[in-house]
Length: 523
Image (cartoon, rainbow, N blue to C red; front, top):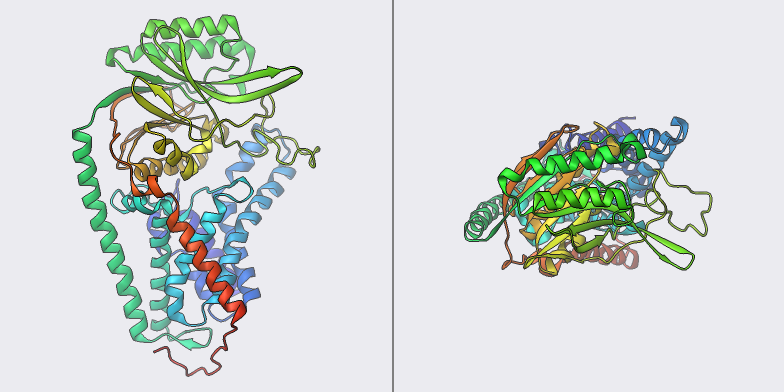
C-alpha cells in the first residue's frame, strides 16, 4: 500500500504543478515519490505503479472533460466518467512504460540520472503524435510563467524544459537515496555519485537561466528595432448553448461588430475574432454576411474571423472549420482551414469500422482538414493562424514560421470548458509557441482567455474568463530571426527517443547480470 500511495502522490503533485493551482515548483520534485516506489521492484510491478501514477495525474488534470461531455455532448454521467477513465488510462500508459523501461534499462543508480529525463521526453514526444496526438500539458508547460527558464525552448522546444525538470527529479531522487541509505535495485548510491549528479543538475540549471537572461535581452533589442502591428482582440463572451440558436445569430454578430467598432479609437491594423465567432455559413447566409461585411467596412480595417464553411462536389459535402481574412473593403483576402482536427469532436476516427461512435459535441458534420503550415498574407506579413487546440502541437506553429509567418494567431472557443482548469491550461501552452519561434502570439477566445504574448514568451495582457472584453496592443513583427527550433524542429526529442530505443535494444540483446550483494557500492 505504501508504494501505491507514493505513486498516487506523484500523480497528484504533477497535476498541482499546472493551472489553475499553478504550484509550478512542485514539478521539480513531483516524480520523486514514484521513483522511490520503483527502487526495489520488478519491471512488471514498475509498470503497475507507473500506471497508477499516470491515471491519478490525468484523471485530476483532465477532469473537465466530464463537464464538457455532459453539458455540451449531452452524455449521461454514467458514460462521461468511464470515458474520462479511458482517456486517463491511455495517457497513464506512457508513465507506466516510462517506469518499466527505467527498471529494465537502469541497473546502476548513476545511470538513472540521465535516463529518467531521456525516457520521460521520449514518452512526451510519442504522445504528441500517436493516435493523432494529445500533448496536453507536457511537463515543461508547468513553467510557462518563468521567462528565463522557457527560453531554451527556442533551441529544444518545450521538450528541453521537460528534460530539465525531469533531470531535477532525478537529481533529488539520488540525493534522497543517498541521504536515507536506500538502494536502487540492490545497489547503494555513493556520496560521490549523489554529489556529482546534483552538481551537474545545478550547473545545467544555471546555464539555462544564464541563456534565458541573455536571450530575453537579445530579443528585446530585436523588438525595439522591428516593425509592429496594432491588433485588437474581441472576446464576445457568447453562451455556447445559445451560440448556434438562429434566434441569437443576429445578436452575436451585432455584439462582435459593436465591440470591434469600440476599438476604432486605437486604430488597429487588424481585428481578431474567436473561432466560429460568426455562427453561420459566411458568404452563404446572405443577410448575416451583409451585416458582418457592413461592420467591417464601418470599422475600416482588416478583420480575421472564424466561421464554419463547406464545399460541394456532386452529392458530397465537405465541411471546414475556417478562418477568413477580410480587407476593409469587405473582400476576402485569404482563408485557413483547421488542419489538426479533434477526434470524436470534429471527426470520428476509423468511422468505417466504428459506425456506432458518435461525436462528443454537436456540430454541422465531420470536418475535413486543411493544409498544415499554410499562412495568410496581410500586406507583406504572413499570418500563422491556428484554430483551437492546434496551438498545443509545437510542429504546427513551427511549420508556419518556417513558411514566413511574422505573427502567430490562435483563435479558439474555450466556452466548452466552463470555469474549469482547462482554459488556463490551454493558455499556458500557447505561450511556448511564441517563445519557441520568437514570434508574437495573439489569442482571441470566445469566453477567454484572450491575450497577447511577445516573442520572448512574455504575457503582455490577458483577459479573465466569461467577461466581455476588447484588448488592443501594438505587437512586434520579427521576420529576420528563425530559431534553432524553427529550423530543425524536434531533433532533441527525437534524439531522446533514439537513445531510449538503442539502450532498450542493447539490454534485450545483451542481458546484464544484476548485483546480488546488498553491500555493492557504486564507484
